[in-house]
Image 1 (tube, rainbow, N blue to C red):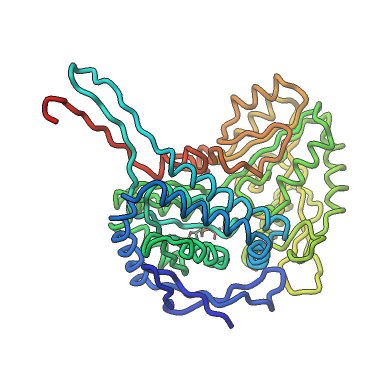
Image 2 (cartoon, helix red, strand yellow):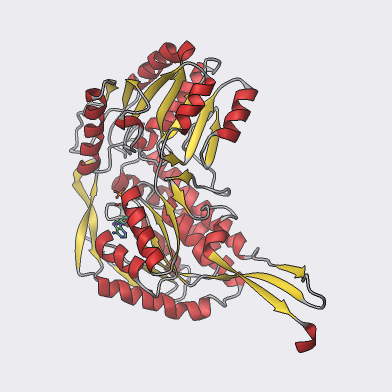
Length: 480
Ligand code: ADP
């Protein structure tokens, strides 16, 4: 069985031990054994990043452009092969996986250009004779901690800006999906990244992740994952004086008003709630529907759900792949049971038989729910959505905002007045009008409010707010 090593200081090195990477569509298929780093090895990776930072932080923008551009080209040229690996290790469908890899390639291309666009400002001082310069500098060593649901896109949208702006990186992928990041780091190394600029330490959150977060030699942490882990990381970053950025999920509302185009609304909700097996932090998990369209909407959703093909992610005809692992499957099923126990009625949500041993769950739609029910408060992170019936737009908006989260929010309506009001008043970082809450562009800011996110936005030009620090210089000409 192939062994995959960590990448530290420009060398591939064994871990303390290794863990199998198992295909959730077919548990007899083991992709390989991936090294798990010790705390000591993580420290070595941090030290090598620190040492590489001395020259990388002063590298010419052209060098950084060339590296990232080359990485982007390689990813795009290999997107079918990398997409297959991604579908195999995570379980999203082949089409979704190839799409995600393509996006990773585009992200590297985008940030290649950004490396050339780091400008500054020259401002007249309020005091006579002085000039003020505002410039940006890289932060230093950045620890990147990533989740399993976007095995290449999330690492790409953290690694690319970190390197573009002159930082060095230690990346720790999720235990369930180290394969895609391993390939990405190999591509970056082969494209000519100097030793230490990019380091890969795979393994446990409690060992590798904690070492990164606690290290005095790491300047910043960018994390995407669960609320509990994010909050614990925040406390440790404050204690060690690090800059940090957290992306922690959502309970995203999709409002469907009486005047919505029913077909548009159903497609937006099927996509937003169930594609990628509902395992997206932007998934539409609360469908808030006004009374006049409620029954027609539920009926049309159920008809559409019956037609969805659930199965092996590598089968071209599959529309919904498996849940990522047995633990997540158990969590999805517990939330469905709890929703029923609290008074909801469930459609779908059963296990789906398959030729291979995997974690196949039919999408579930829970109706007759109220905003206070657990299913409408906590993130499930599976193919499970609930319907909340409301009387009018005002109640819909109030329910949409009645959540500790605020990542993405959608509305399906033919009314410009309601769409415009919703856009302004919904408490979310991203708003979708007549389109799914999930599925975003790579060149504009990504992130949310309230319990969903902390710190500057990711992606697009806004990424520089996190990956650079600002310096203000005062110059008195007489002394220069
Ligand atoms: P999930 O439950 O979806 O896997 P987690 O928040 O547990 O979400 O994991 C997201 C990432 O955070 C993973 O890479 C995981 O290994 C890492 N992680 C988990 N626990 C810690 C921790 N205590 N410190 C740092 N990173 C951690």
